[in-house]
Image (cartoon, rainbow, N blue to C red; front, top):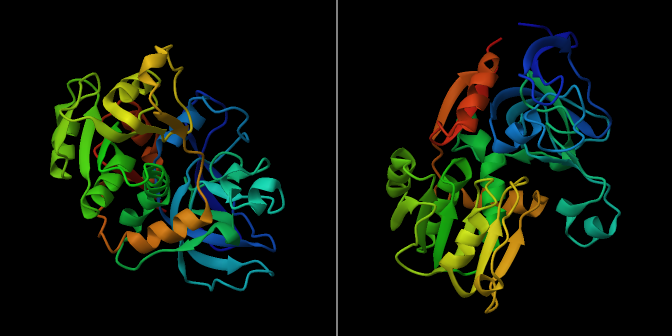
Length: 336
């Protein structure tokens, strides 16, 4: 194992569309407002796929992907006084904001025009160590292991923000039953709301998984649910699901697009949007989301379905996610 202030192993993306490659790099040093974190686990997110596959524009290259990070503080910058060496923290997708634009001042820091994101413009968690702005690091409830906690940092946070946008909807449909959906499902059941799950046509494994999570009904994404929905959340990055979800919700219902990237939405008749149906998107997250969700998770309690792989198998995890062959979340563990 490498010694402090020396080097580290990391899986690095050199260019879009390429496989990530194991590299030996200098270990980063924290700036005045940053923490140096020894990574214990990093979950693999669909947004990582969008970065690796070149579907998100202008990443920092080369880049270390990964933004669902759990680790322990090993050094603090000179201006950091609210964390201590040895504390366990989580690092999410939103990694830095300016703090003074109209969005930051109005509680919409998720829309900051100069925001930077972990694993996209800031080196992320497919590594032994990382540095992070202390403002965007969060203490993790002790009831979760490192592996269990990792998916909470994006699948959980984005899922929670998307669910908040459904307001008090009683009957909620989820399109794409993966890592985020299985967390949101548990909150819905905890809140005594009804869950309807939509999967790729014929994906019996995912439908059975949704049933075990408490779904009232689980079926193909091209099916009509047995009841009109009050709201729907789309986690799958498939634009064609938007008109399908609009057809499934009642008048006055809401459709929430929960991903950062989606294929083009096909044209659809105005009639399926009319009658005050709403179509909204979720962009990133705020610190308030993290604080609320991390307090709620142990109360539910949220249980996370995971599969652990060594960091060196990051490409295997990405491929399995791309092919829809994961149940729950893949989590990478540094093995050095």
